[in-house]
Image 1 (cartoon, helix red, strand yellow):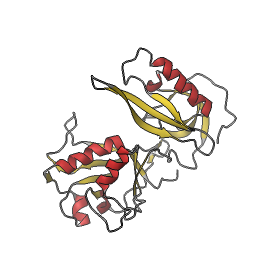
Image 2 (tube, helix red, strand yellow):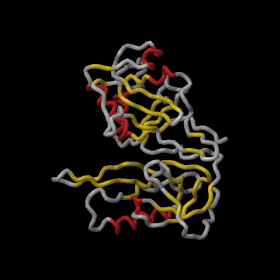
Image 3 (cartoon, helix red, strand yellow):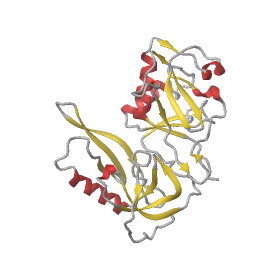
Amino acid sequence: MPTPPKRLWWHLDDVLPLAEHALAAREHRITGQQVLAKAATKAALIWDSEPDGDWIGSNGVPLWYDKDGSPRRVQAHTWLHTPTGTRGTPGQPDRAAGFLRLDRTYRDPKRQSLIKLLRRGAATGGHWLALDPTALHTTAGVEVLDHRDDIAPPDATWAPATVTADAVADLEYPALVAVDYTALGGVLARFDYATVRQIADDLDLVRIGDMPGEHPIITWDHDTAVISWEADDGHTTRRIEADRVHPDTSGRYSLAAYLWPWRTTTTHHPASPNTQK
């Protein structure tokens, strides 16, 4: 069995709109998490841990519905170990912990309310909401970070493969993939520095003649790969940063892990000298 992670991860772009919805609502529905937490009816994010994954939604009324008519919730970005069906979640040891009040203040001056944490995180380049179910009573229990460092279990085995994705215009690149693990229906892939550089250069060429937002942009902040997208409001085109990818201890990059579904191809590339690291 794979080692479960200590934290859950949601992309901030998915969570912050739900938080703003809950805070703007005049009424709030009562949930089982709130009852178990013996909490007052306040604006909150509701965390549900279910067999198919972990979800966050708003308790605001009127409810926010998706196009299919179901209440809007966003799923934590986790891996799936296909042989056992194990998902990359630490679980919810106490369902009362699923009531994440947004405007709660604390005596500890270092601890912000959840809504301030989310808003300031977004304003200062944060991309991921990381939640540690065992430490929700501390400042480390809920964090907004600019990158994700929990990609696969430490006991995962990595094998050479060739991968591609829609976001890279179906071009093919050598990578290491986590054996028997999937994410977003694709594989978990890691690339060496030279390959990420090549992907960045290829995307610069692919985007020639593109409409804004058709393909991503990869730039560099020292040794950190920065993933951005162009957005056009009809007047101006601006870049919106979506993620930062730091090299791991082997110098490899989990480029757009949990953002782009990477898939393997049949093309063969020679194995890297860093194979299995």
